[in-house]
Figure 1: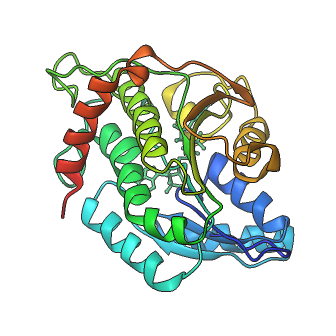
Figure 2: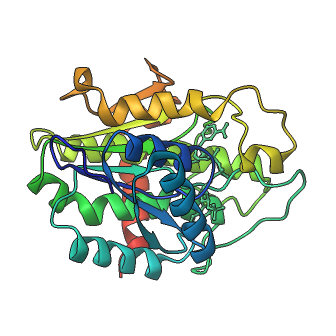
Length: 275
Ligand SMILES: NC(=O)c1ccc[n+]([C@@H]2O[C@H](COP(=O)([O-])OP(=O)(O)OC[C@H]3O[C@@H](n4cnc5c(N)ncnc54)[C@H](OP(=O)(O)O)[C@@H]3O)[C@@H](O)[C@H]2O)c1
């Protein structure tokens, strides 16, 4: 979460202990905002807080939860609602990448395919749990850090139990994020809360890209520029339900624009995240 000097606006950034999320949290803190940085490891949160303080002279708040455990995601949402009466932005950035080449299928604590669980379900749950608070504090923004790497979900195999590979699972989870963004944007029309999805930049030099064996082709700062714009640019006031490739509006995989497919995904997701 972050609070700007002028408007006292709090922002919350899940997945802030590495790569893009850390860069964005640092940038927002440096701009005078009050940031709630999320991470899954206590030590990494301490290090992130220290590094951001060293660079910006500003303190960030932190919160810990493993997004591969839906009970922890619920607990974190409870804690945020308890600690922060004001919230003006949620950036769902945390994510699991392709994994190492040939990596085995992984599941979350709840037994759900890991990339679907962390990349899509956790963000879906956080956004839905925080919606009421964001509406109370409108204007507010939800930004889903998705990817251009999208693949239509298979209704017969939503958790990639067959022909698994990490790239396929990742791409499906990233399209699921975009589909959920469009749905939420429609639900929040007229409330002053916008919801947009973004591909930050291609193959940024981050942990997930290095793990996958791909060579980075862009910098974390390029990705941070795209997300920063969606969080802060006044020209985007009222812009919602869009997908951006970097700073340019783009078309996602056609499944994102298929209402029955989105309704199917929403039913599935809601049933999985219910307490
Ligand atoms: N890198 C690219 O080229 C690229 C391209 C398109 C989209 N994206 C998206 O950009 C976002 C940020 O990725 P990145 O490139 O910055 O990669 P990264 O450095 O690997 O960061 C991923 C973040 O997600 C967190 N995370 C992973 N699993 C988690 C879990 N179970 N619980 C809580 N947090 C968890 C990580 O926490 P730890 O710090 O504890 O590991 C880390 O903070 C992701 O959503 C990714 O899909 C990246």
